[in-house]
Length: 442
Image: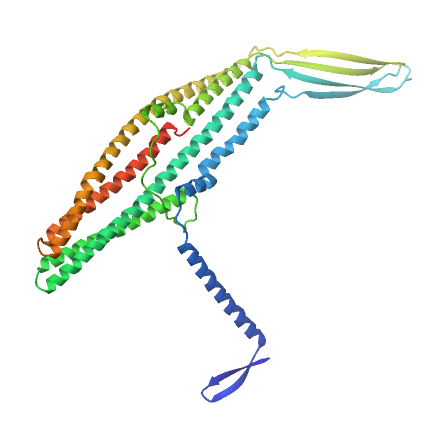
């Protein structure tokens, strides 16, 4: 027992408490303190976590994206098929043997039972060129799978960049709206003072209050959209549900080092089109394989038998040839399926070729229009409105203009800033789509 001093109404006394209670109390105290420290460290780490860059997002997606991992898993099957096709012969040799018992007793019952047997090996050979067609089909299928992996990686990177740009655009949009909200709230404070001083009417005071509430509501709506965009980016990167990433970067696209002719030339050799070309060649080789299967395979067998006579042993070596007669089954099913596969692959490749060129030209025109629009906003419209905002603010403070004129200029500046941000976002996304459609860079 240990004794703890407690104080009650009647004075100080000593009450015995079991030592185990003290240990339990200390353990619980240490546990709670430890949990508090762990939570504090975790909160600090999450609060100080650096924003995600585009390169980091690409790395995370390539490591965990299920679509890319599933496409990469097909490579093992293609490599295994190619390895089997490279074997010297498609059919494995067979070893066979037999044991016989011969009764050599005479009519009078004299004699003995002798064991005889034989051992042989057989090999089936294809005669219709199937081995060559099978190797070609496996090689083309392996090449197509490798191109599929490259194309899937390109598509995943494009999706990640699109989600990344959405989050980045909304972050900058909220910053711009918050700056506008700050200006409106400053104007609202000035209006309150002027209303209190009798210089402005209550109508203008209410107008300033409504404008501030609208700005706050706009920030709240953008915050909801930002949360949704961050959740979509986290799902694409296979991040935990509670880990909504913030991003860092610039909406300005990197300078283009290509022309339309370069993109069109590259578009004809993008991975998806190369994969379709390889698959068409593989389908053509499989058609040759199925047609070659009509020719009968030849099976050669070499056998050695040992036979016992009354007072001697004979060794017999024999060679046999087996050839099936292709009278009833002519592999029409396999040939028909191969023809269908080849036709469908050819149609898909032709469609993809035509669509790739048209898509590149359309996106190029859209990109040029967005560049011109962005240049007009940056060089002429926005500077003039920002100058108007500065002049109108001073004029309002000096009483030269009313609140309505000031809010009108504020709305014009805000609208142009929104248009400018939307144009930058659209330009970045269109450039990404254009390079993905053209397979640029190589």
